[in-house]
Image (tube, rainbow, N blue to C red; front, side, top):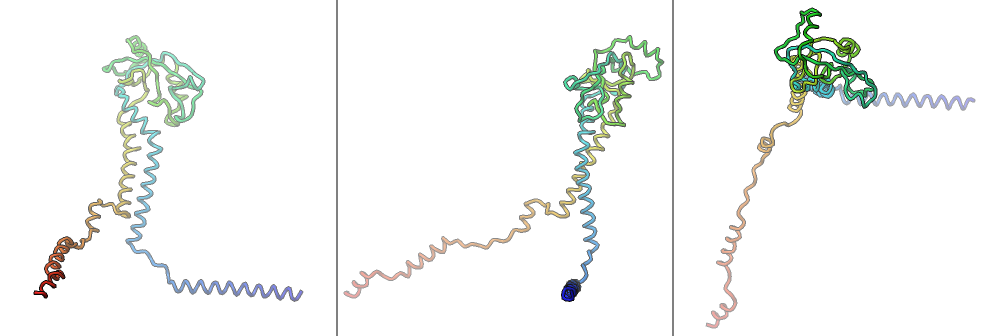
Length: 285
């Protein structure tokens, strides 16, 4: 028992000595290296500027990917449809509640633009096809009923927006169907000049333009500017010609070797010794 306790005590002492030695080595290394160098004001400004620009570039670029299909694409499609700016009068002619994936290729209103639809509502209307006509908002119900006798267009489909879909609270399909989905409903509407079979309940050109500016133009400009600034700060973004001019060195002059070879040949021919036959004939004479 004594031997076991003494061995355990020795092991504990060795472990304490090892830890003490490691602490001493770490302290010596820290003292040798000295305190960590402090960053200058310029380095701090560069660090925080780079972080902010990178955050803006990534955030704006990612927002474009989500905002374009949800807001920008419907706004562009609405502007391309060229809807009338003054509301005309629409009258609901019929409503169809359909079920099945093949029967629901479109819907007057559905919540969720990316999900498959197995139940949909088709609302059909007719409208007064006259650019000079404006819906009389101050008219009484009897006066509106008398206006229904005016010649109207062929039957068209009614959509909550150009895509016929949306997300709450902006689009609530139950309220939309209850308001416009019964036969004989009279309400202001906007039809497309290019395709008169498409009618919407609300349209404002300025709102569509602002949607494109806020959800695409501004994030795109922020992404481009921040990326360019990051490139200027950390990359060599100059033209190739300028970089070549800066790093161009003078080439050593290479003498014309052909001239030197010709000169050497002429010197050799001038100093060339006479042939042996001429030497022998000179001696005999």
